[in-house]
Length: 96
Image 1 (spheres, rainbow, N blue to C red):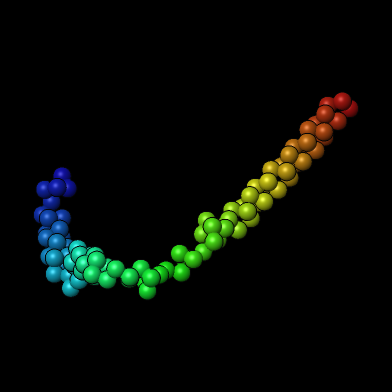
Image 2: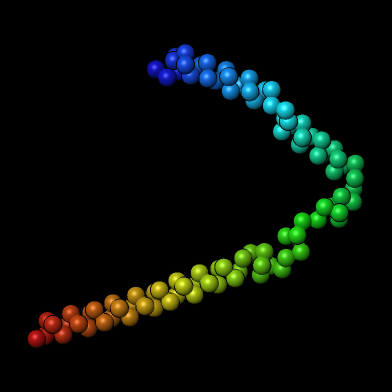
């Protein structure tokens, strides 16, 4: 059984040791940034992300959605035309 295999147990110990000795702990960094943001109330004005000023058209990627929509509509249109042509050919061959 895998759980009783000493090789996996030793590897888990090594990885655990590496994670505990990592130079920068994520929890500590998160805690420091939360405290920094709490101590500087106007921080959001200085560290404003570029995406905050996008119009809804660009924020929701409507340009990409429109291109995909046109592609889907054209694909369906072409498929319907091909199917109608195929049905027409089938009817013609059956009547002959």
